[in-house]
Length: 347
Image (cartoon, rainbow, N blue to C red; front, side, top):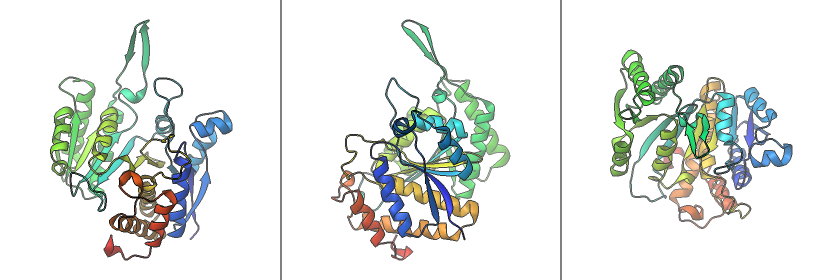
């Protein structure tokens, strides 16, 4: 069977380092991938003068799959987030953030197993802002029935496929009665008409966040609009060790982009100490997606091997400094590769 072409976007800062480490592990696991390197963000500006080159977008459209390292986003000025641009250009409307406890990464909670599902195209992140007067600016929260229904259907279908039991919608419809109210209306409708097999409930977001940090095991799948999903997914990452140990993916009807959800960490770029685990976990999600979409057993086998490998390395205390170990980037990659032959039962 021929290898699958996948776009690799190394990103900025530590992005190229962690991307290289992940590609090394996938090669060792015999993942059937041919990498096509393209750029976005600061790296793209340096090479082409564009933040989001058309060639990068077209390559993802052609391959339908990409793995992306972290890209720098200027704060308060400069260009729009690369992530936001990609989601808009490719209509990647569904973000998925699994948050699970990892043996070898001690935290206050045990056995956390959450999935955060985030609508990716609307809300305040639609970027509709106006200068009203010299000292007044306005940001508009956008919600459409089309996008809310689309995301609701996607979420319940995803939960059913993954055999999850319950979806909880976080909202602020007590204040934003129209926009968050529409999100709730669509979620309720989809549940009642099409997915009664999934338990469903709702929580006002501030109270919901309090309940998460009291006991995250009270939740299963969380469904949120754009801004809430961004905040809550990072909050939940903190329950299991931080952004360096959680993967992320963005799905549309035609394409999927898998990414490290942490920042580009320019302060440690080039030092060889960055943790590649988040991007590696995202690559495992990518392989599982390819296995499902293309009935590819090689991808399925490679995904299982790699997950077994990184779990064994963490359990044995072989990890990078940000999570209590002493390995550098390459050292962690080598530790995972040494364990690729470990039986699945050790995961």
